[in-house]
Image (cartoon, rainbow, N blue to C red):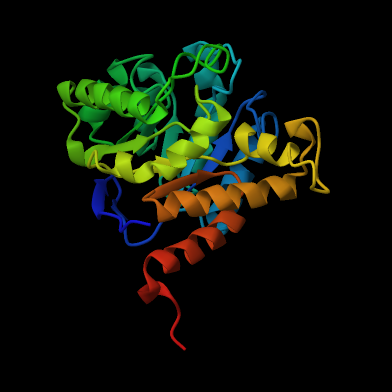
Amino acid sequence: MIPRRKFRLKLPSRTLILGPRTLVMGVLNVTPDSFSDGGNFFSQEKAVQHALQMERDGADLIDIGAESTRPGSLGINAEEEWSRLAPVLAALRTRLKIPISIDTRKSEIAAKAIEIGAELINDVSGLNHDARVAEISARARVPLILMHMRGEPQTMQQKSFARDALKDVSHSLRASLSTARKAGVANSQIVLDPGIGFGKSYAQNYELLAELPQLAKLGFPLLVGTSRKGFISKTLAQDSKSAISSPHPAGIPAEIKIWGTAATVTASILHGAHIVRVHDVAEMVSVARIADCILNPLLAPKN
Protein backbone atom coordinates (compact mmCIF):
# COMPACT_ATOMS: atom_id res chain seq x y z
CA MET A 1 0.00 0.00 0.00
CA ILE A 2 1.47 3.34 -1.06
CA PRO A 3 0.29 6.95 -0.73
CA ARG A 4 -0.71 8.45 -4.05
CA ARG A 5 0.94 11.55 -5.41
CA LYS A 6 -1.40 14.42 -6.20
CA PHE A 7 -1.78 15.52 -9.81
CA ARG A 8 -3.88 18.04 -11.72
CA LEU A 9 -5.27 17.32 -15.18
CA LYS A 10 -6.43 20.42 -17.06
CA LEU A 11 -9.47 19.80 -19.21
CA PRO A 12 -11.18 22.41 -21.38
CA SER A 13 -14.09 22.63 -18.93
CA ARG A 14 -12.42 22.01 -15.56
CA THR A 15 -9.39 20.68 -13.67
CA LEU A 16 -9.44 17.12 -12.37
CA ILE A 17 -7.65 16.57 -9.07
CA LEU A 18 -6.06 13.12 -8.94
CA GLY A 19 -4.93 11.55 -5.70
CA PRO A 20 -7.17 12.52 -2.77
CA ARG A 21 -9.76 9.98 -3.94
CA THR A 22 -10.02 7.47 -6.76
CA LEU A 23 -11.82 8.63 -9.88
CA VAL A 24 -14.11 6.10 -11.54
CA MET A 25 -14.23 6.02 -15.34
CA GLY A 26 -17.30 4.34 -16.79
CA VAL A 27 -16.90 2.28 -19.96
CA LEU A 28 -19.28 2.85 -22.87
CA ASN A 29 -18.63 0.58 -25.86
CA VAL A 30 -20.67 1.52 -28.91
CA THR A 31 -19.51 -1.60 -30.73
CA PRO A 32 -21.08 -4.89 -31.80
CA ASP A 33 -18.10 -6.98 -30.70
CA SER A 34 -16.36 -5.74 -27.54
CA PHE A 35 -15.32 -8.59 -25.24
CA SER A 36 -17.72 -7.89 -22.36
CA ASP A 37 -20.65 -5.80 -23.54
CA GLY A 38 -20.36 -5.74 -27.32
CA GLY A 39 -23.72 -4.99 -28.89
CA ASN A 40 -25.42 -4.03 -25.62
CA PHE A 41 -25.18 -0.30 -26.33
CA PHE A 42 -24.70 -0.30 -30.09
CA SER A 43 -27.85 1.76 -30.69
CA GLN A 44 -27.61 5.48 -30.04
CA GLU A 45 -30.49 5.61 -27.58
CA LYS A 46 -29.24 2.67 -25.49
CA ALA A 47 -25.73 4.16 -25.43
CA VAL A 48 -26.96 7.57 -24.32
CA GLN A 49 -29.19 6.15 -21.60
CA HIS A 50 -26.40 3.93 -20.29
CA ALA A 51 -23.97 6.84 -20.12
CA LEU A 52 -26.50 8.92 -18.20
CA GLN A 53 -27.10 6.00 -15.82
CA MET A 54 -23.37 5.63 -15.18
CA GLU A 55 -23.25 9.33 -14.33
CA ARG A 56 -26.12 8.86 -11.87
CA ASP A 57 -24.29 5.86 -10.42
CA GLY A 58 -21.31 8.04 -9.56
CA ALA A 59 -18.93 7.90 -12.53
CA ASP A 60 -16.45 10.77 -12.66
CA LEU A 61 -15.75 10.31 -16.37
CA ILE A 62 -17.21 8.36 -19.30
CA ASP A 63 -14.86 6.64 -21.77
CA ILE A 64 -16.53 6.05 -25.14
CA GLY A 65 -15.06 3.57 -27.60
CA ALA A 66 -16.37 2.71 -31.07
CA GLU A 67 -13.69 0.20 -32.11
CA SER A 68 -13.21 -3.09 -30.29
CA THR A 69 -9.62 -3.85 -29.31
CA ARG A 70 -10.40 -7.14 -27.60
CA PRO A 71 -8.03 -10.06 -28.29
CA GLY A 72 -8.54 -11.28 -31.85
CA SER A 73 -10.34 -8.17 -33.10
CA LEU A 74 -9.48 -6.99 -36.61
CA GLY A 75 -10.13 -3.29 -36.23
CA ILE A 76 -12.22 -0.97 -38.41
CA ASN A 77 -11.50 2.04 -40.59
CA ALA A 78 -11.92 5.62 -39.43
CA GLU A 79 -15.14 6.14 -41.37
CA GLU A 80 -16.86 3.24 -39.64
CA GLU A 81 -15.52 4.24 -36.22
CA TRP A 82 -16.76 7.80 -36.62
CA SER A 83 -20.18 6.73 -37.87
CA ARG A 84 -20.65 4.78 -34.64
CA LEU A 85 -19.19 7.43 -32.36
CA ALA A 86 -20.44 10.75 -33.73
CA PRO A 87 -24.19 10.47 -33.01
CA VAL A 88 -23.60 9.22 -29.45
CA LEU A 89 -21.06 11.91 -28.67
CA ALA A 90 -23.26 14.62 -30.17
CA ALA A 91 -26.23 13.45 -28.10
CA LEU A 92 -24.23 13.35 -24.87
CA ARG A 93 -22.23 16.56 -25.14
CA THR A 94 -25.04 18.71 -23.70
CA ARG A 95 -26.58 16.10 -21.41
CA LEU A 96 -23.62 14.75 -19.44
CA LYS A 97 -22.21 16.91 -16.68
CA ILE A 98 -19.04 14.82 -16.37
CA PRO A 99 -16.15 14.80 -18.87
CA ILE A 100 -16.05 12.49 -21.87
CA SER A 101 -12.93 10.54 -22.83
CA ILE A 102 -12.55 9.04 -26.29
CA ASP A 103 -11.02 5.56 -26.60
CA THR A 104 -9.36 5.66 -30.02
CA ARG A 105 -6.06 4.86 -31.73
CA LYS A 106 -6.67 7.22 -34.65
CA SER A 107 -5.71 10.91 -34.80
CA GLU A 108 -8.56 11.65 -37.20
CA ILE A 109 -11.12 10.35 -34.71
CA ALA A 110 -9.45 12.12 -31.78
CA ALA A 111 -9.52 15.46 -33.59
CA LYS A 112 -13.18 15.18 -34.60
CA ALA A 113 -14.23 14.02 -31.15
CA ILE A 114 -12.53 16.94 -29.43
CA GLU A 115 -14.29 19.34 -31.79
CA ILE A 116 -17.66 18.18 -30.51
CA GLY A 117 -16.95 17.91 -26.83
CA ALA A 118 -14.50 15.15 -25.87
CA GLU A 119 -12.02 16.29 -23.21
CA LEU A 120 -9.54 13.41 -22.96
CA ILE A 121 -7.93 10.99 -25.42
CA ASN A 122 -7.40 7.38 -24.36
CA ASP A 123 -4.98 5.69 -26.77
CA VAL A 124 -4.77 1.97 -26.04
CA SER A 125 -1.87 1.61 -28.47
CA GLY A 126 0.33 4.06 -26.58
CA LEU A 127 0.84 6.06 -29.82
CA ASN A 128 2.19 3.01 -31.63
CA HIS A 129 -0.74 2.87 -34.06
CA ASP A 130 -0.84 6.56 -34.97
CA ALA A 131 1.72 8.85 -33.36
CA ARG A 132 -0.21 11.89 -34.60
CA VAL A 133 -2.69 11.32 -31.75
CA ALA A 134 -0.10 13.09 -29.56
CA GLU A 135 -0.13 16.11 -31.88
CA ILE A 136 -3.90 16.35 -31.52
CA SER A 137 -3.61 16.20 -27.74
CA ALA A 138 -0.92 18.87 -27.68
CA ARG A 139 -2.76 21.19 -30.06
CA ALA A 140 -6.07 20.92 -28.20
CA ARG A 141 -4.41 20.85 -24.78
CA VAL A 142 -6.42 17.86 -23.65
CA PRO A 143 -5.01 15.08 -21.44
CA LEU A 144 -3.63 11.97 -23.10
CA ILE A 145 -3.89 8.47 -21.61
CA LEU A 146 -1.08 6.21 -22.83
CA MET A 147 -1.68 2.49 -22.47
CA HIS A 148 0.73 -0.38 -22.97
CA MET A 149 -0.25 -2.98 -25.53
CA ARG A 150 2.17 -5.70 -26.56
CA GLY A 151 1.55 -6.25 -30.29
CA GLU A 152 -1.77 -5.73 -32.06
CA PRO A 153 -5.27 -6.72 -30.88
CA GLN A 154 -5.58 -9.43 -33.53
CA THR A 155 -2.52 -11.34 -32.32
CA MET A 156 -1.56 -9.94 -28.90
CA GLN A 157 -2.70 -13.04 -26.98
CA GLN A 158 -1.24 -15.48 -29.52
CA LYS A 159 2.36 -14.32 -29.71
CA SER A 160 4.95 -14.99 -27.02
CA PHE A 161 4.66 -12.92 -23.87
CA ALA A 162 7.49 -10.85 -22.45
CA ARG A 163 9.85 -12.67 -20.08
CA ASP A 164 9.67 -9.73 -17.68
CA ALA A 165 6.27 -8.04 -17.89
CA LEU A 166 7.14 -5.10 -15.65
CA LYS A 167 10.30 -4.36 -17.61
CA ASP A 168 8.44 -4.65 -20.92
CA VAL A 169 5.64 -2.34 -19.80
CA SER A 170 8.04 0.22 -18.31
CA HIS A 171 10.23 0.28 -21.42
CA SER A 172 7.26 0.64 -23.77
CA LEU A 173 5.59 3.36 -21.71
CA ARG A 174 8.83 5.33 -21.62
CA ALA A 175 8.94 5.14 -25.42
CA SER A 176 5.32 6.34 -25.60
CA LEU A 177 6.16 9.18 -23.23
CA SER A 178 9.07 10.22 -25.44
CA THR A 179 6.82 10.32 -28.51
CA ALA A 180 4.21 12.37 -26.65
CA ARG A 181 6.75 14.87 -25.37
CA LYS A 182 8.29 15.36 -28.81
CA ALA A 183 4.82 16.20 -30.10
CA GLY A 184 4.47 18.86 -27.42
CA VAL A 185 2.28 17.11 -24.85
CA ALA A 186 3.02 18.48 -21.39
CA ASN A 187 4.03 16.00 -18.69
CA SER A 188 1.18 17.35 -16.57
CA GLN A 189 -1.31 16.20 -19.22
CA ILE A 190 -0.27 12.53 -19.39
CA VAL A 191 -1.76 9.50 -17.64
CA LEU A 192 -0.23 6.02 -17.87
CA ASP A 193 -2.05 2.68 -18.09
CA PRO A 194 -0.20 -0.68 -17.82
CA GLY A 195 -2.71 -2.30 -20.19
CA ILE A 196 -3.98 -5.19 -18.09
CA GLY A 197 -5.06 -7.97 -20.44
CA PHE A 198 -3.38 -6.53 -23.54
CA GLY A 199 -0.62 -8.92 -24.58
CA LYS A 200 -0.03 -10.38 -21.12
CA SER A 201 -0.39 -13.85 -19.70
CA TYR A 202 -2.94 -14.38 -16.93
CA ALA A 203 -0.15 -14.52 -14.35
CA GLN A 204 1.46 -11.35 -15.71
CA ASN A 205 -1.75 -9.41 -15.18
CA TYR A 206 -1.62 -10.26 -11.49
CA GLU A 207 2.09 -9.50 -11.38
CA LEU A 208 1.53 -6.03 -12.84
CA LEU A 209 -1.19 -5.27 -10.31
CA ALA A 210 1.21 -6.21 -7.53
CA GLU A 211 4.00 -4.14 -9.10
CA LEU A 212 2.00 -0.94 -9.71
CA PRO A 213 4.13 0.96 -7.16
CA GLN A 214 7.09 0.43 -9.50
CA LEU A 215 5.17 2.00 -12.39
CA ALA A 216 4.14 4.88 -10.11
CA LYS A 217 7.85 5.71 -9.87
CA LEU A 218 7.69 6.89 -13.50
CA GLY A 219 6.09 10.01 -12.00
CA PHE A 220 2.69 10.05 -13.71
CA PRO A 221 -0.85 9.32 -12.57
CA LEU A 222 -1.98 5.74 -13.20
CA LEU A 223 -5.18 4.45 -14.76
CA VAL A 224 -5.97 0.75 -14.42
CA GLY A 225 -8.66 -1.20 -16.26
CA THR A 226 -9.32 -4.75 -15.05
CA SER A 227 -13.09 -4.79 -15.36
CA ARG A 228 -14.58 -8.18 -16.34
CA LYS A 229 -11.36 -9.22 -18.08
CA GLY A 230 -10.52 -12.75 -19.12
CA PHE A 231 -7.87 -13.39 -16.49
CA ILE A 232 -10.48 -12.88 -13.77
CA SER A 233 -13.00 -15.22 -15.39
CA LYS A 234 -10.34 -17.82 -16.11
CA THR A 235 -9.13 -17.76 -12.51
CA LEU A 236 -12.63 -18.29 -11.18
CA ALA A 237 -13.40 -20.97 -13.77
CA GLN A 238 -10.34 -22.98 -12.72
CA ASP A 239 -11.38 -23.08 -9.08
CA SER A 240 -12.54 -26.69 -9.05
CA LYS A 241 -13.67 -26.42 -5.44
CA SER A 242 -16.02 -23.56 -6.17
CA ALA A 243 -19.71 -23.92 -6.84
CA ILE A 244 -19.30 -21.47 -9.73
CA SER A 245 -16.72 -23.62 -11.46
CA SER A 246 -17.03 -23.63 -15.26
CA PRO A 247 -14.76 -24.95 -18.02
CA HIS A 248 -15.21 -21.72 -19.97
CA PRO A 249 -14.62 -18.16 -18.69
CA ALA A 250 -17.80 -17.05 -20.47
CA GLY A 251 -19.74 -19.40 -18.22
CA ILE A 252 -18.97 -17.36 -15.10
CA PRO A 253 -22.12 -15.49 -13.99
CA ALA A 254 -21.91 -11.71 -14.33
CA GLU A 255 -22.40 -11.16 -10.59
CA ILE A 256 -19.41 -13.38 -9.85
CA LYS A 257 -17.22 -11.47 -12.32
CA ILE A 258 -18.12 -8.34 -10.38
CA TRP A 259 -16.61 -9.85 -7.23
CA GLY A 260 -13.39 -10.68 -9.06
CA THR A 261 -13.30 -7.23 -10.58
CA ALA A 262 -13.86 -5.70 -7.14
CA ALA A 263 -10.80 -7.52 -5.81
CA THR A 264 -8.60 -6.23 -8.62
CA VAL A 265 -9.98 -2.70 -8.35
CA THR A 266 -9.19 -2.69 -4.64
CA ALA A 267 -5.66 -3.95 -5.30
CA SER A 268 -5.18 -1.31 -8.00
CA ILE A 269 -6.20 1.51 -5.67
CA LEU A 270 -4.10 0.30 -2.74
CA HIS A 271 -1.10 0.03 -5.06
CA GLY A 272 -1.40 3.52 -6.50
CA ALA A 273 -4.08 3.78 -9.22
CA HIS A 274 -5.61 7.24 -9.50
CA ILE A 275 -8.36 6.23 -11.96
CA VAL A 276 -10.10 2.87 -12.40
CA ARG A 277 -11.89 2.07 -15.67
CA VAL A 278 -14.96 -0.10 -15.08
CA HIS A 279 -18.21 -1.39 -16.55
CA ASP A 280 -20.14 -1.82 -13.29
CA VAL A 281 -20.02 1.74 -12.06
CA ALA A 282 -22.37 1.66 -9.07
CA GLU A 283 -20.63 -1.36 -7.55
CA MET A 284 -17.10 -0.08 -8.19
CA VAL A 285 -17.87 3.37 -6.83
CA SER A 286 -18.62 1.62 -3.53
CA VAL A 287 -15.46 -0.47 -3.80
CA ALA A 288 -13.37 2.64 -4.47
CA ARG A 289 -14.93 4.46 -1.53
CA ILE A 290 -13.88 1.74 0.90
CA ALA A 291 -10.42 1.30 -0.64
CA ASP A 292 -9.84 5.07 -0.39
CA CYS A 293 -10.68 4.95 3.31
CA ILE A 294 -8.09 2.21 3.77
CA LEU A 295 -5.52 4.40 2.03
CA ASN A 296 -6.55 7.43 4.05
CA PRO A 297 -8.65 6.77 7.20
CA LEU A 298 -9.36 10.50 7.41
CA LEU A 299 -11.83 9.97 4.56
CA ALA A 300 -13.94 7.66 6.73
CA PRO A 301 -17.17 9.06 8.23
CA LYS A 302 -16.94 10.42 11.74
CA ASN A 303 -18.56 8.50 14.59
